Figure 1 (cartoon, one colour):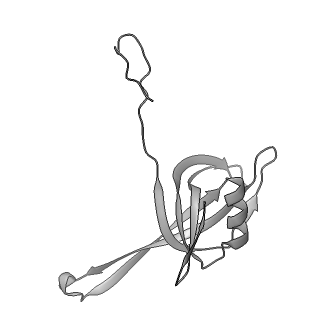
Figure 2 (cartoon, rainbow, N blue to C red; figure 1 turned 45 degrees about the vertical axis):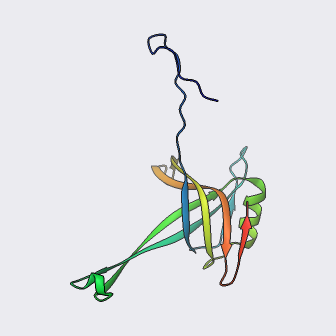
Length: 138
């Protein structure tokens, strides 16, 4: 349970809830790879494409006009041991999956020793979507 301080002047720490939650439904862009940095736990990584579609033109309300589409690519990282192994084994390029996770912003050094920024979805759950059913991996 969180408590609010009696007085801000007293220098008490205020703890409040926040939310970092992402839900994505899309297609896997590449077979997962498992990577491990020395001294750290392995991670399964794959890309996921989501699409946004809209109609443009004079008759937007009458289902006529040009259809435009934008694809956004997301980097998915799976750290949880059971989920990491299942994702590595069963998720394949072209699979339609639903991912729940949180957004993480970080930095890394590339091969040329240049500092790069990366946005990653830290995966908390994967649901493999098929035409008639879905398999849930939590």
